[in-house]
Length: 422
Image 1 (cartoon, rainbow, N blue to C red):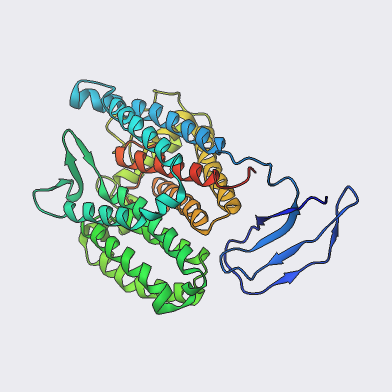
Image 2 (spheres, rainbow, N blue to C red; image 1 turned 180 degrees about the vertical axis):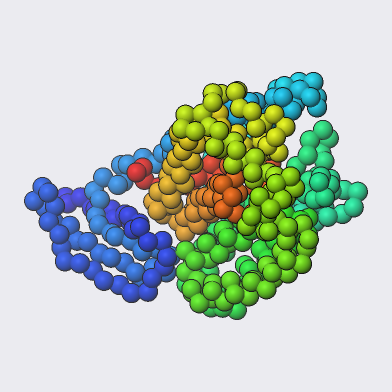
């Protein structure tokens, strides 16, 4: 009896949907047999090469271990740098040089629990929770804006106090937005090309949340969410003209947000020329330059950095990479960035192998969030972008940020369970 062959789809490098169909002639295999290869563009969700795989039925699904190892390596680097960069400051403020390290480790334990829980959760169940989680995240952002409820630090009201802990709802809402966008794009399919019925609705939903985040104000998080939303709409098949139209419409809004507010305008001016105000708005970036320059190729040695001694503001949060650059040098900085790049690349590989549109968009969204966060953080510490107050994923101090990133890793592992191994 002739064995039936099971067909499986191998995603191509292009993630955007297409609208045509071509098939190539039968190709000869190395063993002398033949395979029928087809380029399928008919499915609005994927562009795939299809060929028969006799062993696909026997190939077990598996969790991606590489993404977990990369996460743990980055977290380990982060814990070391948090202790090194904050030890002196923590001792002066709290009498305990490991104060910030201990708090980050507690958040890490909670983050690992979330990672394992999400990694073991069925994607269909996660999809059913997309809208409720989005609503809960938006509710948290609203609560922050209520006087007496939100915690104000340095003029920004971004946190909620829960007992002895503070959480940042604008970080947590990213999970709800990601699940919602993945669900919406998978549901709409090719109808995303319809401007009013497909393209505009998610922009209205996400735009409302971004507007609330801007009121806090938190320009950095709002910018990342906006970039991720447009990125997912693009790979989901939205028309390029629609995306450009939204970009043009956002320009006057950005102008009003930046140039009409004095401290934001000053940030832009100091970004263009930080030396024009070296003791004021340009101080932070200049100290970052000094830290990176002092490190040279191999660094001054772990724990031996000087800029963290009350020169470089926020050396354990937004500018942790500057502190790392001073102590571990150019080589250490590049090593951390390569780990982050590998994380994003591995996430893209998981997305490419996903056999479900929701899973694919979910994995891509995690990659976009980590990738844009990293690019903006690096741009800020090197003076290529104005200061935004964004953390370096997995490395910077920040409980809400760490937990959300760990959930992102859990989502990638959950998606990897629904694909053949690479």
